[in-house]
Amino acid sequence: MNNEMSIWRVRPLCMVISGLCASTAFAAVANPVALQASASSQPALMHAKLWSAGQSPSGYLVSEKLDGVRAFWDGQVLRFRSGLPIAAPAWFTDALPKTALDGELWLGRGRFDELSGLVRRQQPVDADWHHVKYMIFDLPGVSGGFAERAQRITTLLAQVNQPWLQAVPQATVPDAKALQKLLKQVAKDGGEGLVLHRANALWAPGRSDALRKLKPMADDDARVVAHLPGQGKHAGRLGALLLELPDGQRFALGTGLTDAQRADPPAIGTMVTYRYREMTSKGLPRFASFLRVREFQ
Image 1 (cartoon, helix red, strand yellow):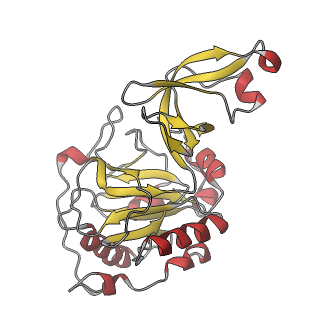
Image 2 (spheres, helix red, strand yellow):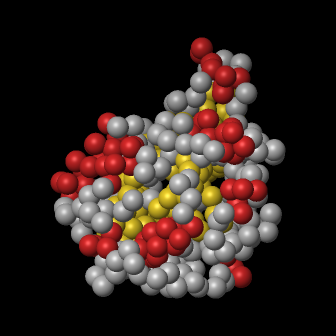
């Protein structure tokens, strides 16, 4: 395992899951047809909500939130979360098992931009892909609680035995204070944040109360619906993006944009990611700042 992940060597997962250990045989489960996606449809995946401040992490498994590109393997094709296929080398996909996998393509902390350029190429460059890890964090459609699925991931990937195909390390954290300490350490080491998954939660598509993300600053996605003109030093170019949230509310986002982005702003209809500190009473982000265009819409 990469040294960057050594913080997660807290305890073996078999100690967390009652009655299971690394020798547990992986029981293959047929992939539901609903998990497979065409090039024009999004795969059915679980998505995280925000972690509530002060909530106890007891009963959750905790992992690092990797700053990678989410990749869904339906047993035949590797896809972005949009459903579009990823042009990975044949040796990469040929080694994957014939069961659905959900995870992140990852180069390491702080290397998202490099990874994004690499995986967007229509013709994969073998030399570059040999540095990519496929970090698996769930088995879509498989029965049992998340702790059981996490154990199955470990067993399945041990059978595949490819060094670039790895399970995302999971750990238990005793209380909210320890969780914040872990978050600060991950952030200090260059990590993006944490993911908490309730250990007994069944797999289900969509945004789930059982799956949470925690970062030093929260982030979320919204769609660009208009370009607002700039004033003063930004006269003649973009002043702010008018963004629309999933619930239909809109807000202007002007902080965090570079001069290049103001001169050539994200197109109308583009999904962008922004950071913020907290929410207003009306459910709008406070102190929001542009982060990036969301790749692979």
